[in-house]
Length: 255
Image (tube, rainbow, N blue to C red):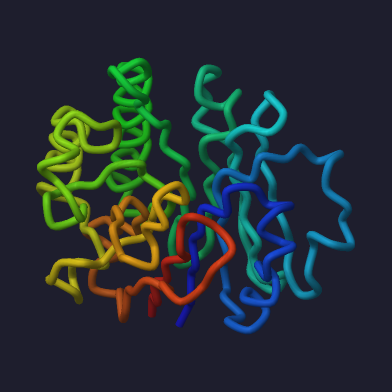
């Protein structure tokens, strides 16, 4: 069994002060993936951000205080690392890291925000297309694949507390939702919905409106597997009681 946890920490340094590593060391995941780290290597003191028993792979954005992803992986696991997709416009923002292990390929991604008035929608959809092409290349080779992270997309109306009020909001644009439709149409599966079908299950809540206490949220953080790994998924759930970010961690267990 492998336990994989993904969390948009909204600043690695800030979240560390709010119990990030206490949670991590309590849960003891095999892989702990973080998004929106907002930190460069020289901003992080290793002793504070490198727990015993784990290797850490950070892929920060070139721009300080922005974006970036990271992976903590148990140091007894054999793996190979690929930082980014080999596409400068995405890799400069630290959007993804791939970890190839003997049993499956793990990919962490921080999908771009499409922004108000669709300002970055073209960029977002280009990233989505490139990511799927990369995953398809692995799937065609027979690899088992897990894509975890903040997709910045609420797929269906059930995934957002107030769909009618957000028809023209970034993360719920019809173009983004259609991409998710296509992504999950055949070869890829949303693991959370394999186990939980009902409403009111969210992973992000706005700080501005005290939304979390009222559970007025969005489900935009996912663990999705390809068809080769689907049969190995044991459990997938949200850690909604864990604070420290405007997102909650999400967990999947793979056998």
